[in-house]
Image (cartoon, rainbow, N blue to C red; front, side):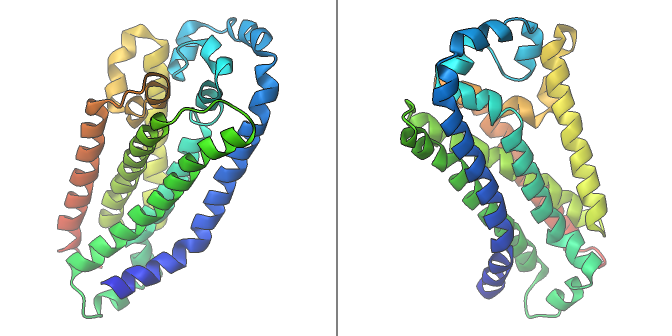
Length: 267
């Protein structure tokens, strides 16, 4: 099991390096920009006040003043509201779609099953491969933020980034686990990727609509983005227990159902 795991990790290092490089570049740019933007905070805040409060709430912006008054506020509006989740989704879907469906499509699943390894061990080796890559990406992309912030002279928080890393890992793992679940039933990467991207777009729109229209606020509970409350972690130092439970349930449930189906499916 370990030799296969090690081999799979080595094959993903180039992909991981690319995503890490993109995230580090983005963090570097934002850390460099903030001290310059902070000097014009009042003018920018006046401009943001023109947007409807419902629109701002849909993107987890509770206060326009907070965006420009702190480095973390700037990151929530520029990095965590869209770009970072997008990188995680692309990486998680890429890894998860290859776990089962990708191997079947490439014709390599039968080769793997011909080795002296059970389907259960093969399945969980692929699962842990993806979890490892995601852990390295999240740790680097989140852990680098305080370092770049200090480098450019911004006041940076501390323990909040540890909590944010925990929440971000759960968010990334959940998307990956659901992708693995669909991959365990599908036969091609395209079907898996298309299904997950469609699901993520729906969840994102649900989060936006529920935040913009009070009559539809209840639908927010169907979206992973609702539970990825990065602003609550960074500003209030609060990690929602409900979010942890939802994410853990999605991870464990998806991986378990995928495993039970993979054990008996035709490849």
